View 1: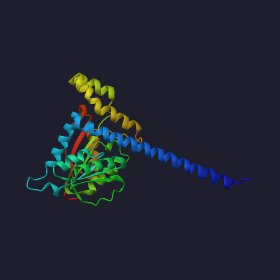
View 2: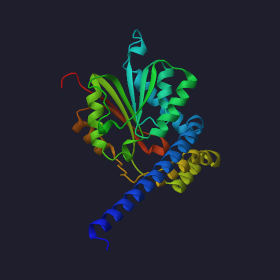
View 3: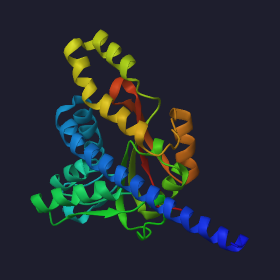
View 4: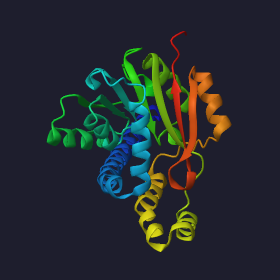
Length: 264
């Protein structure tokens, strides 16, 4: 006769195996999705004009506080939520020492593979979530950049606190966050009305893959913040807001330039 304890152990073992199998399947799907998104993103980054404009905006702010007499390789920039590393490469190409950090290991692998091809000595990528203890030292970066990942992060306030912690006093941070959901059809119609059918069609280069990624990712948030909400959260994290403006696709995002003051 099978005892209750034996039955419990049997079901417990079966449950553990099933959990492991499901976890492995989820890991495989997540990795496949991340790699696919990373490859698609490479094409989007080069072809999608709103991204090109956003890239120029952010890079100009990174460059703004750096004197011309300073060797840019002495400026340490952390790109939080770097994905496949496209903007991190932009920072390195502009001469800065850049570290890309992302919680998706598969995307970090894609970024590292591209780095090996380009051979930048002042560029590195690291797997980790800044909000969960990435091992980065306090006051170790001159600048922090975060583009379009706060709104899907499970702990956006903690991420802001950690961004403040790793910044040197007087250092600057640039955050870009969505203020609303970017609807596929609504975005297409609005751009068609303003800029014509061709521009609307090109907008789908980003809108459709982004919608697929958001549908398949782990459901967190979204954390859409308007000007007042974003300012409040940054001040609570210790930042001084220097500038804030609407940007990206029909003003769907807020770009914030902030500073960690020298007196804490």
